[in-house]
Amino acid sequence: NELVVSFGEMLIDFVPTVAGVSLAEAPAFLKAPGGAPANVAIAVARLGGAAAFAGKLGDDEFGRMLAAILRENGVDDSAVVFDAGARTALAFVTLRADGEREFMFYRNPSADMLLTADELNVGLLKRAAVFHYGSISLIAEPCRSAHLRAMEVAKEAGALLSYDPNLREALWPSREEARAKILSIWDQADIVKVSEVELEFLTGIDSVEDDVVMKLWRPTFKLLLVTLGDQGCKYYARDFRGSVPSYKVQQVDTTGAGDAFVGALLRKIVLDPSSLQDQKKLEEAIKFANACGAITTIKKGAIPSLPTEIEVLRLMENA
Ligand code: ATP
Image 1 (cartoon, rainbow, N blue to C red):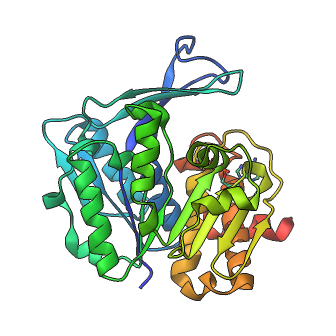
Image 2: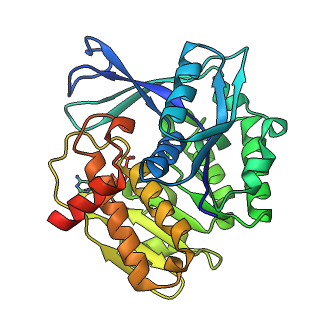
């Protein structure tokens, strides 16, 4: 069984047509489909893997457009439900000239936040080899309960649980609540991936030294990863740890690099779960994931940049 089921939000990012402006300065916006869990599902499918996305969309033009994007990319959308009374979420996002990301969310509430436990496609969840999720779906009820229930169903059926918190501070009532809720499900995961920013947010320490990362380790984990942008990533497994550099590319837009990395790694793990216990195999899988993340930064946008397996292998061979 190779199925990766990714749970959470799918939405539309509106990104400025020109680079390096604030949201207020932007002359116009392009619509870019996104939402980290949806990106991960599409990343897996683009690499030739079996993937499904589970979540709720508005029964509106944008919701139907997003579901069509899933299907066009070969992602199973049988666990997507539509809300007749709420809109598909929108996020206006820009990378300002000073390097800061600026977000403005339209979720009051949006359809993704209204998924209920009753609406879960339990049959699909039970077929997952890996169940992947973030933390945005933990912010508000009823989606929070649906998220917790989905984790339970997948885990009981034998899936590996994969967690990428994908911190979006602006969506939480406070930093304290974000930290508490993100960590409230920490112990249940098998595989966890954090960025440098998330590592600092969760530990309160601005360092990627092993002793800091290990504050996030749990004895039940199979793999903990810290992604470091163009520096690749550090990995921690039960019996070994190390770091794997990334590949040199002309970076244009990093949106979706983390999701591409996760999708590629999960694809490798479902193909050979013994990679989690074998350092050589794991490093090969991480190299592949780094290459997949690197390629995603060459072009603008997340979904249009996600590579096929051949493109990833080509970058690895030419390095
Ligand atoms: P995002 O939130 O922007 O999607 P992230 O912060 O979760 O990303 P990153 O560390 O930016 O994750 O990127 C994930 C992986 O992609 C890195 O571990 C690395 O392998 C690869 N990567 C990202 N940026 C670059 C780059 N400029 N050059 C080479 N590889 C990169």
